[in-house]
Length: 431
Ligand SMILES: NC(=O)c1ccc[n+]([C@@H]2O[C@H](COP(=O)([O-])OP(=O)(O)OC[C@H]3O[C@@H](n4cnc5c(N)ncnc54)[C@H](OP(=O)(O)O)[C@@H]3O)[C@@H](O)[C@H]2O)c1
Image (cartoon, rainbow, N blue to C red; front, side, top):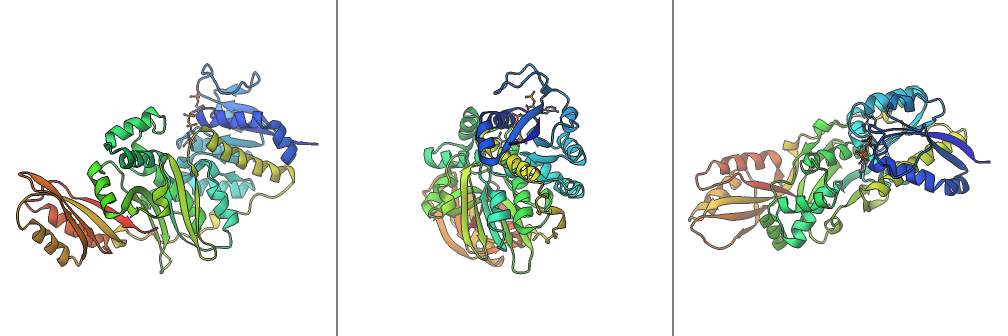
């Protein structure tokens, strides 16, 4: 006989509607495959009159999320409301009520993970969050289960679909950042307010979660160096192509030789033939290097109703299987982790692409290269096209140098009278 469990949903919007749909449509399949009869018993929304993707029995919908987390007939709470509050308070209440919790909410896990994992451990219940990073890609499960025998050495991710869409369209169609952002919004990939996508916050929240799982280290969002894509122009895309590179918003987490962590999100030039360079449009990918397994790449849809709901339901089924089998909570106790020191960004060493906007005069290149030389930044290549009355872009690719030296050099160069705009710097990465 199938084991019956009550599911409470916090939020029945885009993701929540998909979760309810998969639970209801897939009901028989879950009974057949896993012996689980999962029933949506409560679902909290803000507006009862909004049309929903699924029709729920009378009395299930409520505008009081407290009624979901306190309901004795609900054993598993799945949260897909978003934001930090009231989600944090509700999740804590559900955990303290002895319920297992599944969430798609990266903001609350990135900001309040320590507290939530601690309460889950104290209560002996599960807190699962597969959908919070890369939507439908089972990256959390792969790291915790498939790669458990590995010491993870590095992780490179394209974690934000909106920015990847914009950069791909700029590369393939040649449009401007603003045009392609408009296109992403029209297609529903970008939020009406896309600030957190564009400035790297969304990817940084996901990186905080991945770093916790991959390196067992609690990193705070403030420790992740973040730079957005809004200064990337069509000309940078064109120069990158000329130089054999593609520009991506890259999330990087790396273990250094002295057991510190580099954690950063910024636009990066990656070689055009690298696997991550081929991740197009709204797709996500994560490249993980483990000491035993070597390089593995996870690829798929990082957002969207059904891909994300698929990950939520997979967590629900996991937790429900354990509950029904009388099993203990997952042994992933994220409260027992170390806190690896984070490398200050000034110490990070990469190569650089510089776009200087300079007056087209003799001697400019000499002055700039002289400053780079005094900061011990050696040049790999230079591009200077055409002559004009006005300003011209001067492109310099460098060899590796510490961020601190790069910043000092750029500050000095930007003070030169023939340099007419703040210099654009893009770090070069070799995933
Ligand atoms: N969309 C994606 O592709 C995606 C991918 C991965 C992760 N996520 C994460 O999933 C979460 C949900 O995203 P979404 O796109 O589904 O958002 P959404 O469409 O705006 O849905 C939010 C839902 O929560 C309900 N809600 C919000 N505040 C509430 C409150 N105080 N009390 C009761 N109900 C409340 C809303 O009610 P009403 O319907 O009445 O307004 C709505 O049903 C977010 O954490 C997001 O980061 C989303």
